[in-house]
Image (cartoon, rainbow, N blue to C red; front, side, top):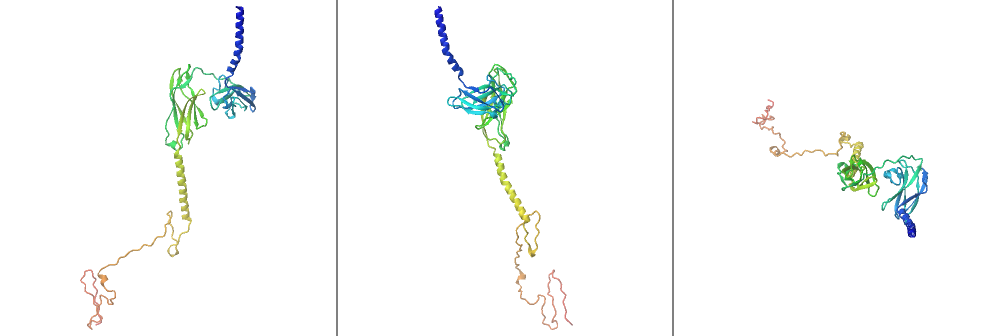
Length: 368
């Protein structure tokens, strides 16, 4: 029996030696990050290298605070020095190596160098790093047990009004139902609502929902979303909680045609007003035309000068009657009749007219 036991022990040892490299290979699978130095001061640089990443993948390297490799980056990239990050592309074997400037993150350490994929399959890895001279604070207590998940489809409620048509900020309400699928209670969760225009990265804004979700409970959540003034085009509204994107909703924003109409009217009204003002000035400063007799006619104040007017003529029609039948060539007066009597020679005789309207003319007698 002792001989058989020794043989079994030897076989087990040989089998363990054969399986040890396989176990090391399995442990080494997945993306890894290595640093040239574990500590450096601000203004310096370190070399970041890695392996096990997807081939030809675009990666982003950042120095992040309040993070440890076991917990990742709980605060998202808001706790990282985003302005001084570096991008790198892996080779065909999934390896990379590039220098990264050392910059203080916006939150205290413990710090890590966070590497994550930008395109393709999601993958990330962290390496412990200490920024010399940067403050160090304990990590916040980690809430365990509570985990939110979206139960219904996300939608945007609301519509654009007249002010939005004239360039006011478009606004909607993000409505969704979430449930607590974890084993702990979630109290007053803080969501991150992001808006992305086209292919650009979303701009995140924190919004807190007041309420408590027990394990297995669900709640209807309404979060306001607002864009900048004059925004138009294709947007995407995203909701993130605990570093994980829960939902995305497209949003097509129409163009504010009221602003375009305003500028068109402005381009028409202003030249017209300038033209009228110019004509009024020219009308004021030009010399006045002289009237009849060389006298300059005064121009009435505030009244635009009109052109010369033709003189008015009165059309008189001829009268047809008894007066027109008399010959204009008669040389004798109608009231003077010569008398054949020598005694009455030179005597004027008034015509006898019985008309009441005819005046009585005295008879003029000659010399006796």
